[in-house]
Length: 358
Image (tube, rainbow, N blue to C red):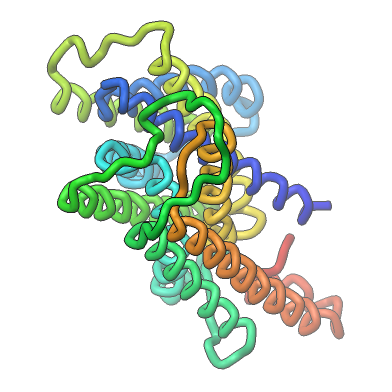
């Protein structure tokens, strides 16, 4: 039952993020400032989450120490504010499809960061990644990561011939295939990769913060609140024209409401729950679904023309995803078999193997 809930949760998360790329790109295409957009979405998320968090967790919330507050502040600064500001500039320089494609580098970045941090964080109860390359599960993980890297490279750098899969009236002309200057394209790719690096760090270190402050809803709300203040400072610094702050009943408001309430407000809490149950790398490995869902929406709803490189890349990403999950499943089965002969040893086995489901 827990396993099916986790799978349903991660599919919902990635579907929401696919809509995030499409609506965010639309808002930028109609002239909305990227830094102002981040501030508005974080403010909307805070206003949405604050009353809910106070109502449900005000009596059970642990004491917030100064050291914990500082950790949450920097977690918000580098994992949320910086990541959203950087991805906004990168997405404005590229396309929604590319943004969704580059997001698939997140599993690779998270995987290597988790391995590097596993030695220093072995005493932490959060689930860091362990890799035994000489075992078959370890080899499956490495093959899966390689396929993900190949899929990202194919979608980002190989376009190939155009494939028209669906013909209907386009909702928005900015989703037509465009030829972007090479230097702008490279800049966008670099910024999107940088954003994924900060996001991967957030996935990993949030698991550590959850151990000392386990109230997921309050933690999510506090991060959104701190990110609102941080993004406001950045927006004032980079968007001094008052016209950039105007927002009406249009696609800007829709994008801000969706990204603030649904993406930031709802999925941040869902991600915290998934990280607690299955670990940060499991969540990161499901990001190829964003590309597939974005392509489906772009083709069948927006009428976007896809390229051969996008199709090949999507196939590689799906293959990489299943190889990694296959490897993780094999590791869990071996860990459970090792614990099964002696039920009294169950708890120590869970602590020694970060892949066992509680």
